[in-house]
Image 1 (cartoon, rainbow, N blue to C red):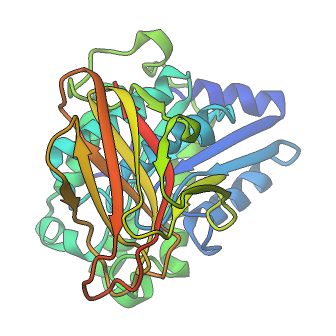
Image 2: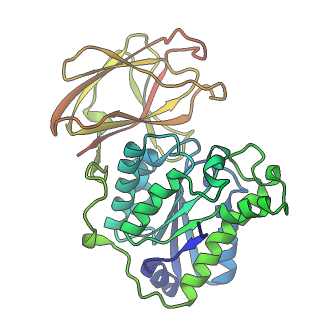
Image 3: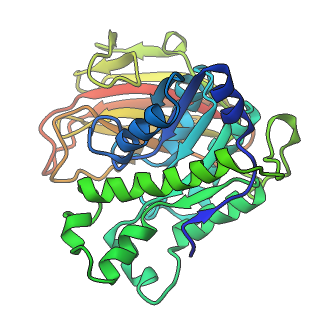
Length: 361
């Protein structure tokens, strides 16, 4: 696969540069998050400030470690649309890799359509991790990237395979694998530099030579690839939730993308709310102190929600975006959630911290 696929023109970015102020957004996982200073957005920022001296650059990084396109979708309105981003670079090839192909296409396409509907320029950027090696070693393209390329072609979006040059450098023996990906996933300084250089090469070409192709934006979006995409979402306010037990709403100071959390420590505490739509997503602040979550939908039986507890998880403040329901009959639904001690290895408490509730229509 070639590194750069140039498609629809970045008309908003070009106008923003001419105006003297650019709003640049990022969506992705730990490879892109701003919480790691040596990630590729740092090098991209430096290049832009030097190439366009005098243009004010404002960055809005909604990338969160260990999250996929579902989390990016749930944050898009708040972090990327209301902030009036001119261009958003979307990176989810790695973090969506192990998600069912149909489910990840629903959230990926929903995110892309949401951004394009707001007239934002979108570029898809692809990274790499070791589990993709077998798909790459004989000249193939990882399926996760193929799926994103399908969306890029459908919506006429440019794409950049950021990891391609680093991979080729390793193939030729110029750098060792562990200088690029010491843990198999997260690039070291040189890897991030290669990633940024690929995006920079694309932007240099796009911003210096005419592009007659038009990206699909606003009301001109084509019919979706996946009819069950998650473009239409609506937040459920905490003050519409009925609580039973020691619940409170606290200002969130640990995770910058969220301002409040609905929380309890009480064994058996529960809550209930009604939403309208066909699906429901919940973002938890999760970790070893999180209890067992059980749910009841429309008066049915109580069911446990099973979430993996990895050895590396912190006590809490791990952002865990959960797709609770999908493909429900469109309409009103009533949900109850309750919490108890999981009583398993890796769980040391019964805490519940909810960061966001979101209905899908």
